[in-house]
Structures are given as C-alpha cells and as structure tokens.
Amino acid sequence: MAQIGGVQSWCLGVTLQLILAAVLHQGLATVAPPTTAQTTAAPHKAPGRPEKGNYVITRSNGTACLLASMGLQLNVTFNSVSQNKTVQDVVNLQPNLTKASGSCDVDRASLLLSMDAEKTNLTFTFTQNTTTNKFHLSEVSLFADWPDMREPVSASNRSLDFLRGTSGFSYMCHEEQTLTVAQDLSINTFQLQVQPFNVTGDQFGAAEECQLDEDDMLIPIIVGAALAGLVLIVLLAYLIGRKRSHAGYQTI
Ligand SMILES: *[C@@H]1O[C@H](CO)[C@@H](O)[C@H](O)[C@H]1NC(C)=O
Ligand SMILES: *[C@@H]1O[C@H](CO)[C@@H](O)[C@H](O)[C@H]1NC(C)=O
Ligand SMILES: *[C@@H]1O[C@H](CO)[C@@H](O)[C@H](O)[C@H]1NC(C)=O
Ligand SMILES: *[C@@H]1O[C@H](CO)[C@@H](O)[C@H](O)[C@H]1NC(C)=O
Image 1 (cartoon, protein in one colour):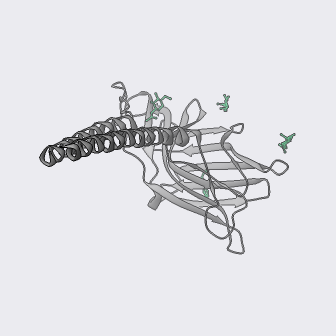
Image 2 (spheres, protein in one colour):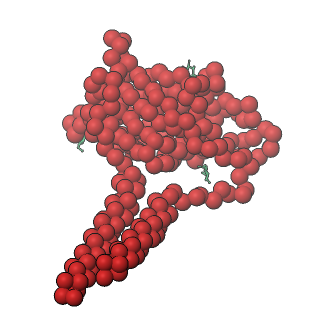
Image 3 (cartoon, rainbow, N blue to C red):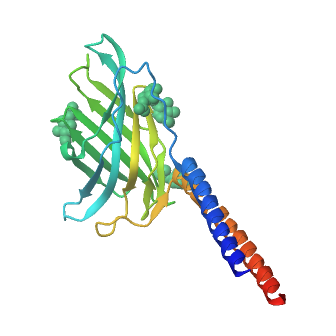
C-alpha cells in the first residue's frame, strides 16, 4: 500500500508539472506581443525598437521642471529625391545624438529635441489646466531637412489631446503608442514616462499608467488566478486521495 501511495503521489507530481507547463506555455503565448506584419510595399525596412532616452529640462536655478524618458520613432511622409515619389520613412531617435532643451511655465511646458546638427527638430508642448490640475500633450511640431527630401518637412498640430495625466504625477506607457500628429507625421513612443509639471527633486512622481498597459497587465493576472485555482484543486484532490489510501492501509 505504501508502494502504491508513492506511485500515486509521483503520478500526481508529474501530472501537476505537465498541467503547469501547459498553462504557463499557453499564458506566455497569449502575453507575447503580436508580431505585426510589415507591409511589403514599404520601400524602407522599418528599424527596430528605438533606444530609450532620458531628457530633463531645468529652470535657471538648476531645478528640474520637466522629465521625460522614452524611445521615439518618427514616421514621416515626404517626397523622396532618390525614388522620385512620396515615401514613408521610419526613423529612430538616437538619444546620444539628441540635444534636449525647452521651457517650463505654470500652464505650458515644452521639450525641444534637436538632432543631426539641427536638421531635425521635434517639439512636444504640454498644457496644464490649473483649475482641474490635469495636463495633456497639446502640440507637436517637427522640422526635418533630411538628405533625401525634395523639400524640408514642417509638420505641426496645435490641437492634440494625448498623454493625459494629473499634475504632480507622471504619465507612463510601456506599450508602444502611436501619436498621429498630421497627415505626414506620426510618432511611435516606447516605454514612455513623462512629467511636464510639478516635478519635485529630479525623480518622477507616482505614475499613472495608460490604458494599453492596464489591459496588458490583465492577462498575467487572469493566468495567475487560474493557476492558483488549479493548484488548489490538484492539492485538494491529492490530500483527499492520500487520506483515503491511508484509511485503507489502516483497516488492513
Ligand atoms: C507609418 O505610417 C504609415 C501611414 O501613415 C503606416 O501605414 C505605417 O504602418 C507606419 N509605420 C510604422 C512603423 O509605424
Ligand atoms: C532647431 O532648434 C535649434 C535649437 O536647438 C534652433 O537653433 C534651430 O534654429 C532650429 N532649427 C529649425 C530649422 O527650426
Ligand atoms: C479647465 O477645465 C475647466 C473644466 O473642464 C474648463 O471649464 C476650463 O475652460 C479649462 N481651462 C482652460 C484654460 O482650458
Ligand atoms: C490635429 O489633431 C487632431 C486630433 O488628433 C485632428 O483631428 C486634426 O485633424 C489634426 N490636424 C491636422 C492639421 O492634421
């Protein structure tokens, strides 16, 4: 009987491992980001994920007033000289070649990123409503004068409503987010965290997470809960089984 008990628990152990492996594999498969098919028509190969840059704007007294940490990818439509047609070019910002400057006012803060000896200027302007203490990204403008452009691209939009947050908190979005600025410009952001107002010290305040991240977090939570339930059921079955075989042993 003791022999059978041992075999039984060994079987249970193996079954449990198999179930765990199956569920985990399933979970991971669901969590893995969907591979976006690249359009074959795209003339340029899309670059990989952009490197994350950390940008700080300071007041004249040296204290930080705007913090931003993000990977940026520009998607610009322009008239190509080499291809003699309109093309979409996707370009990653390289943080080590990017200079940050800007300004901070009570209700307006801006971050200007300059690259390639000022051949690319990208400006983000945040607006704060001091009554409601809410902020958002209200303006984006890009000036780009790249070698293959027939004429420089100048795109801007002053009526945007992206990255909505609360003053004193930071806005965070780990997931890729696309900010559509104009017909010829969209910006993909990666692992973004910004705090354009009420910065204390040089650290981000508590983060308000974007909806995309919250949706993403839901899957592991559901998988975790399902796993916990499964483990409990298997454990109960095992305990009941053990009690039975034990009782059987005693009567013999
Ligand atoms: C760039 O923009 C075009 C059209 O606006 C879109 O079809 C394409 O998927 C975008 N590429 C990336 C990498 O975001
Ligand atoms: C780009 O920004 C720099 C400041 O960093 C400025 O001096 C320059 O004039 C800007 N270039 C254009 C074309 O706007
Ligand atoms: C701030 O928000 C309030 C309430 O939504 C609105 O009435 C007011 O016009 C806003 N102020 C500014 C400057 O946008
Ligand atoms: C500016 O952005 C708004 C909101 O996304 C959009 O409705 C509008 O068409 C944009 N304006 C231009 C000139 O692209």
